Length: 217
Image 1 (cartoon, rainbow, N blue to C red):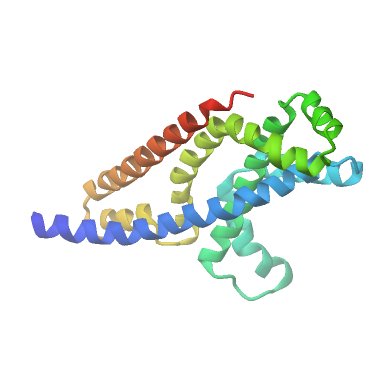
Image 2 (cartoon, rainbow, N blue to C red):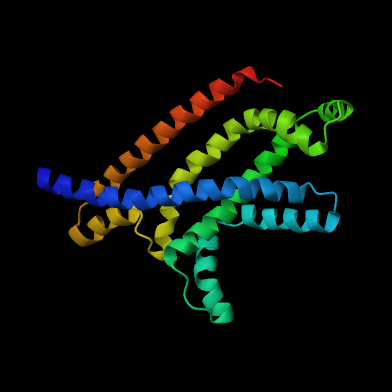
């Protein structure tokens, strides 16, 4: 039993590396992209604002699994382009999807800041950009950490959708044992990886939230 456990643990760990790559790259790219989308959706140039809001509505209103499939198969079927690398397709779909969700969280945080703070900053001779980055941004970060944390934990679990186009993340590796060796327990064992990873993230997010408690803006 122990050699089998060791083998399964090794293979699941390899799958988890892929899972972690999807998670970390998505997070690093979707956060700044989400902020850019927020600025676009809040733009006073109405055509741009409407286009971006419609885009966000479409992305948030359709399944991430469908978006992964479209990104992977769409270019080849529509424009006869060469097949995209599977991991690249997953990352593009995930980054766009989570940037849309993060943009709404950022927008809610920014709109929750009283207008008087912008006006006070301008009275002191600060530009709008200076007011935002030196005064408002830190308050926004404090307010968006809890909902952002929920999305980050959801991202951990959503990485399993990569298997829909045969990216060997941890669930796909576990499923190979089910279909190839009729072993069901590796599938449950893979859940332990998610639990540990989510637990670590929950602790880190909780610590971050406590550190920001001084900023009650």
